[in-house]
Length: 228
Image 1 (cartoon, one colour):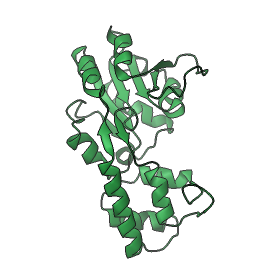
Image 2 (cartoon, rainbow, N blue to C red):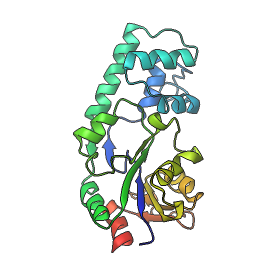
Image 3 (spheres, rainbow, N blue to C red):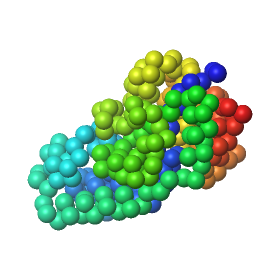
């Protein structure tokens, strides 16, 4: 078997979510770089995004105050905290697992693959996603590479090598699947990792994608390519 380890993105790969851009909505709650002409109400700050996704504080109040202090925004007031907790509640309630996840992961596991998740997450949705939606049972117990735990965000080159190093598998024997061309395909490919672009909505239909990237419509199509 050429490939031995699979890394899968979480959101829009394993999990669907109706809450869009929750971190930038949190940025709006804190009134960091407000811009009422933008649909999010702020100018999205990628450094704010990075810090939120790499901070391992699971108490909402402590997290909010830590982020506010980091960006010089002062103490979080009661209204801001209430709005943040409502945002987190909506995010958890909007999550659902895609239909193809369990059969695809089961087939790969039966074929001998080590199954890992590599995803940008802040601390609040992780337990809900992996335990309440049954993902934990599908992936290796040591295979969760989550940005808030690793202190690394996808687009940082080192995050793609965490799982291969952890399991002692060369990058060229590793597969990565996700919906982002840059974060889930181009980034891993720079390390020799085989990327699959998961295009559930057909957004890349007819578009040019880099050589070496395989576009698939669902996880079972990827599984057919990998194990037949």
